[in-house]
Image (cartoon, rainbow, N blue to C red; front, side, top):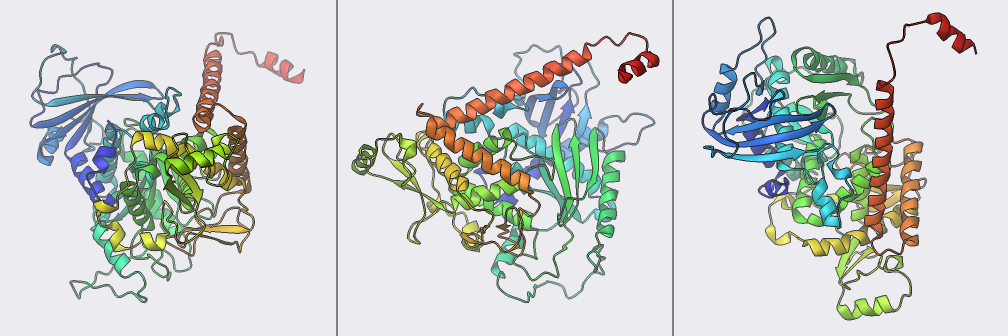
Length: 571
């Protein structure tokens, strides 16, 4: 079961996160520790639902049970009665290990609660076993169980990090990792921010968008003597010291966590901490919202820009399911061609690549053609339907066409952010929703993909910048490889740290894909393109595994002879 049905219950991203965190807080994750089936009825009471998860990790498959209780008190009682290891520091997490015997209950016995069996594969989206675009998207979309694992990871890290002097803070996820545009293999972006009503704060910020200087209304005339750890001379040493404290907590006090330390990204506003939760196999990027931009006269200094951007993207997906389907295909394409990378400075980040996708969606229009005009268009061209440069082709069913927006009268798939960032857009207006059926998506997606490849194959990044706020192309005024105006903080460049090599890789791959589609006459070019890339990726992965197995099989029983090694080196 995908998480899309769960997302559709909430019109607001912030409200969805609040509900998902409340579910995670009354949930307990139990590691089976090698057992196939365990007995949960002896110690657990008031169980609402159980997800029996078989999850693939680098160490093989592991069995987990995600138990959702009817109340938070029931989950806390189970955690309190669980025993701690003697001599070790007790950590009150809602992640436990099973230390009993395998269950001897019959496999088909009816239990007093519902159980759902889920199998999660780490490379599920790289399997070429699909026959349509919607099947590819469905295979790659995040499952509901994977989403719940991310939130139970979040709330347990929150129990450790947001305590003591940071008790007034909470962890908030942001980015595409927990919305329709995300996939299970993506990183979980987390930010430590104040405990506030984020949705209300976003609405207030939007209402005061163009009112400078801002005067925030407060219910009290009294103000705390708060301490800022951000240096007035823009020295990040104090901020890095705070981040080192959180990194120390993760390393020393958080069980089953692999930490990578505090990373200062090139030309980034704040450093981050990269770490991995081993039991849920979720890779996380942690940052801190300290209001560093409170002196900047920009659009959204009242709230965290990452949370606002995620709210806007979430609302876009609610209004048009075509957007998420297109983004998922292109993210797979970028991953297979090494356009995006999890390591900073190697390639584009997923969000930087997403900004290019959004600008393209601001430039294209999907129209419905009548059968007569579609037949006339197709009969007037002797070439393949993907070679029609005027409207980027008409589908073989003669219904849809995808073309660049050339006048203000045409409505693009994604409007400018100056229209998106308003209170009316965040309202749940069901009359403005656009929903395409699977057969319609299978007609439109290949046309959009082909148009995307052609659009960026001919784009002049050296002279032009991409303005997401105004939805227009502008003259570039600096020497950055790619300039994409941040629609939330308009004085910043989203792709400021994308180097020339990453840009060359992107342009090379989209030009190769465009040429491949023009030369292919199979009639299903974008789909066959992604299949070929997946098969190539699997072959390379198989070679890597074979090499690793061969190295492990080398005979290491021979005595160590330094003289022989020295003679070999001298030769």
